[in-house]
Image 1 (cartoon, one colour):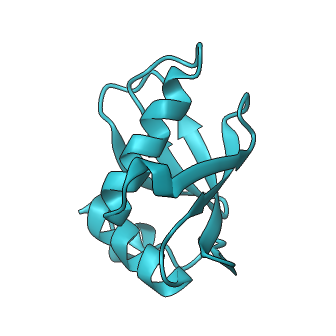
Image 2: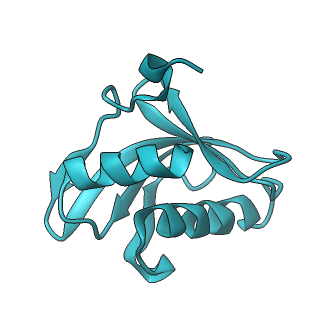
Length: 107
């Protein structure tokens, strides 16, 4: 992958009271759980769990919390619970910090 593809400059992260919000595109049933990169203006996340009974959502929160270095309780899906496209809120100081942590998680 080129450096340009690995950059998350196009990720739409907004500052909100208590943290940041950003769009996520979830790929359930993946072989590996990881931060993949961008899907349009959303962060693409691969989760192994199937999209049933909230298991993929639980995995998403766990993966995002690990990538951001926060507790799972500090990450919340604010919209899109039944959709691949979601809006997530996390307790992170700034959009710049979140972007940097996600880029590190991508390796």
